[in-house]
Length: 148
Length: 128
Image 1 (tube, each protein chain N blue to C red):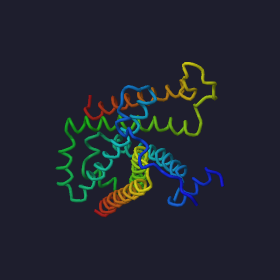
Image 2 (cartoon, one colour):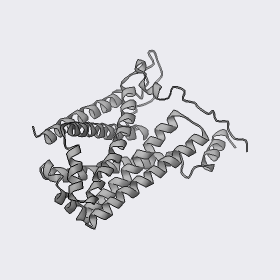
Image 3 (cartoon, chains in turn green, red):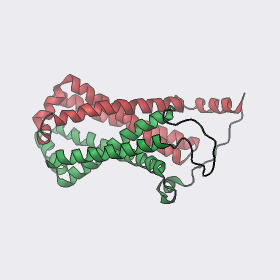
Image 4 (cartoon, rainbow over the protein chains, first blue to last red):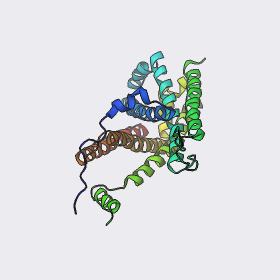
């Protein structure tokens, strides 16, 4: 069987393509945030698994590690984690719905100015809801961590 | 054989699961993780935050078999979801068979290593 020839590198823009601000719409910001928060949360998760493993070495090891993380900067970092996880979850649910066809609307004729029917108010509302929920969660986290 | 069938045969020849199946796993692990992480966070919030980080409180958490199961499921769900997410990002940036194989092997290895390391913590603390 003849194999289909695969180019060695299709996406020439790479990460630079993600970061190019000249083509930003809400959908593009959402795409970028979803990946950025995902990578950030995985890094946090690996750190968190390592952090909690110090408890195996006893109370002193646990408390000395806590001294490193329970600081103002540690709390600010946790608030960023709260915001990132809330956005990633809410926007992720929107993406699951979109993938199964919910919220896409009906196909329409592409008339000028060629706004895609799929990028409708439902999608934009979903992105806004994710951003608002994220801000609310960060505010709540700030109150808990700083005892305001 | 049509071209799409031919393409599918080629893809199936070197992957265990189809991408559509992997995406379903990605979505299921993501949604399931939301629920178990919510329980994990609630365990921190049912007592004052400072108290929730005390050594004795954490050890008591690890002795609760139901909570241990939740912790293990968080570990597995987020590791699978997170490392598959990294795999998807890396495959979006570059496409070739060698790259795909390398990315798949590295992400699966890292996922297994993280699950093993976290499970070790859970087992050891449970026995303290």
